[in-house]
Length: 119
Image 1 (cartoon, one colour):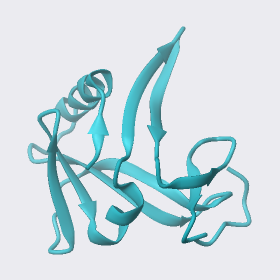
Image 2 (cartoon, helix red, strand yellow):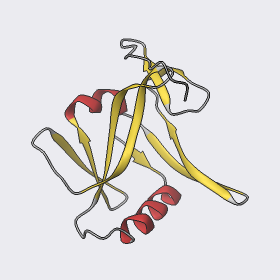
Image 3 (cartoon, helix red, strand yellow):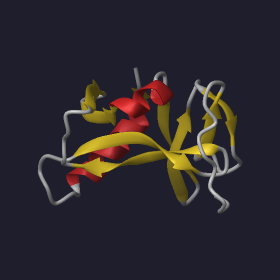
């Protein structure tokens, strides 16, 4: 299960409404790399595959590839505004180690493959 806060859902819906293609959805995933071994992938997509898991969260269509589900179960996404800036924050209960930038992690059972380049 993935949780998206009300403020994050509002911001995502606003961003989706600005997309040119009508059937876009939020795609979440995990890729190897980053300082700690895995990096989050979050973006809009309109290409569905048979290896996707579909969820409805806060009236948003959320799609996660089956390989990433085990790393993202329990994930919480929020959107925080701070002065003139703002951004999405991610809390992942599966992450045992995270890097300073917050976009890279590893789990107790899988270290991934850290990249050579810093965050």
